[in-house]
Length: 363
Image 1 (cartoon, rainbow, N blue to C red):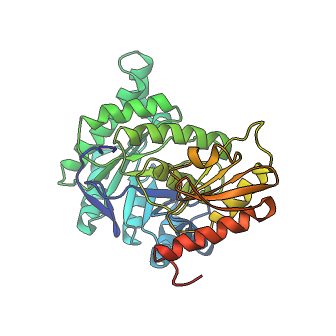
Image 2 (image 1 turned 90 degrees about the vertical axis):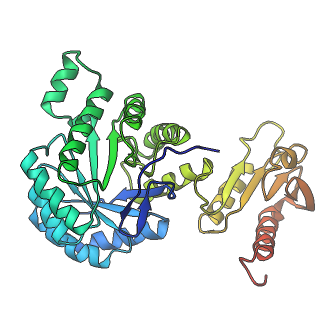
Image 3 (image 1 turned 180 degrees about the vertical axis):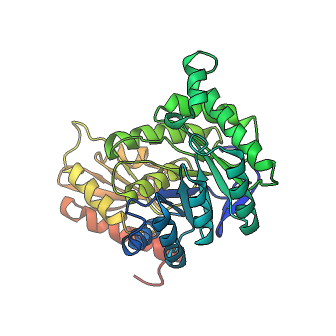
């Protein structure tokens, strides 16, 4: 059981964050925010994929104005991603966003922060203080280069300075992110910050890379933090379609037991004992499960001798032999079928389990 860090509660729209609320999965639109139709279409696809919260870049006034229409149509709470210009934050609030992201590295003038804090407080809109190692202010970069502090320490102190600016105006609807493209820097920054405040954390590895390398980095970094109880929302940052970010984020939570999110597939890596085309079979089962929403653990194993035993925790599974295989439930064999019938037999057994659990009324 993972013991999560105790934090205060905020709400992004109708999504609760912190204080034991379910860990939410965020993503960011990769369309031009000024293109309202394309942005709304992408948000809807992400909502269908299981995304909980969406963030949109706000590079100029036109993008901030477009948020009025995007927020009105979006099935997800919308966060405005703000850099450099506090006026864009104010315009985004007028457009109806449910959250703001501010970067202390490029937006730290007290009078400007005051304007944003008071406007956000009036609308009860939370602010995420999003510190990135790559965009620390010049002052903090100079301290790091001079050896006066480490990068994680500079990230934490930068965030603390921003927290104080907001708190001075009675604003405490705060969420924190301390991201770097380096896993160790990121993890250390969150560890340091965890003892400094009780605001909820948004965690991720920024600029993680493409789907292949980025998923590895993100899974290790986010997984490490979640195992330590540090994290209330997550985003997997990948240079690919954002639906892949959502899928990966959900699966990270699922394998850690932090989210019930449809089926889980277990499959053996194959070896010299395998006498069926297990790779093709496992891929076929994965494609089938990709549209399934029922929380069920499914195993695809290559060896009929060891398969049912090694995958005993699976709700249902199949294991191959020479020209045939078995279907098993919780490690107990329930059917023997020809190799060509293994996939269909597995699907039939999954449907039976769904009916037994009340997900189907009849086969």
